[in-house]
Length: 490
Image (cartoon, rainbow, N blue to C red; front, side, top):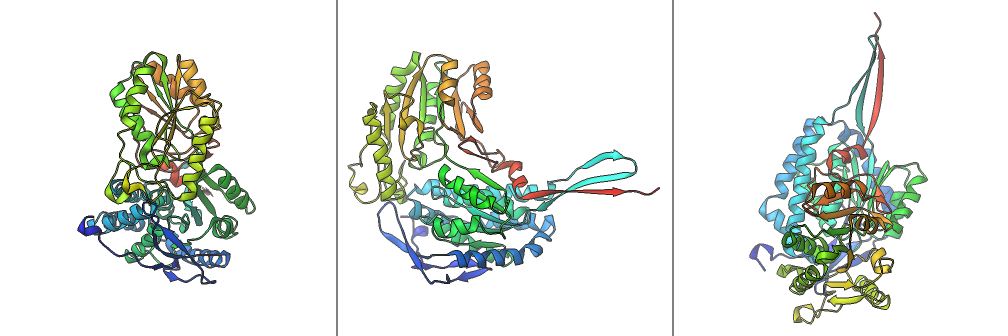
């Protein structure tokens, strides 16, 4: 391990409410583990419903002062905080916490820190340029609109990208003048809690940012249904997203839902196959396939199917699996329970007639005998109606299917309940444009995959949710439009 990464992790992490560390009312705690070793990293305070009430009160009290700050003040705060995150010592610290808490390769954890800083820069630059409009009614009437903060915002974050996905919604919320309550996933609360202290050190007023670690049944339900919350952002499974929306609906509170995916990556015969192959590896096996927009269905045109699949499987077998701190190509799954779930899907795939071309087992490498490792797994020969082609597995399990025509590729791409992302590899511009028009998904990547930026809006349709994170569109989630009409007397 690099010398800069040799640091102790506190044995206990409190909640963060009202600008300071806070003990939960019931003084309860829960353990947090390293998925690469199964070792306990620390204990974390377990928030309950009474702590949600305290956090909402703190956020509501801080709201008028933060919302009244000039846009230029929030702009400079965001710029300054981005610079802080990019200081080598802070980048290293956050990357180490993320690596140990999720098991992901250290290089991926570093990238998550950098992209969080980039989000701060983007929304810092946008906050004083998010203009209203004037509406030409008549010479006697001045009608204009302004964007006002929506209020207290709740952010229920997933465990696969604890820092990056939480702050994907938090940064525009803060930039727009809202206050924030973050409920991190119970598996991965550490970077959220460290960011709370970093924001306080940077001068963020008390109560503007609050963190409630705990379990969904306690904190998530209470937070989504609290009458003092004005907007809920949720990233996670379809089933939990529906439950969050039901809670928020009790108070007529708007929600942004980024849910599951079952993305296709379509390889046409005329594509640059070398680039397409490497793209498919990254699109599927980054973060051990624990990515909502992972390209879990590889659709390969008949003309090149046999040769491309042979090369692809050979490449998959060279993926190095190991502990995140060693910077492998792929780390472990998040927990024993989740690995068991993924392995059950592998068994289902075999029962459904699928053939495993590679993987499907725990790696034999000595470094993988503790931790929640699984080989990258490739299936072929199954029906597209099989469960492994239709259901989100959220692990390193890929299905390969063949198609003959663009019509068939479109039909297969759209034939799932999800619509988050899709990828297309072709040198035919007409074909590429047709795919982009007819595939039902929130993002279409052509001759690339996941190559956008914080400026690119991200979100889905169908069971993948609604609303958009990232881009200018995200600011719309966290503001409300006020229309002002002034009659001018002559």
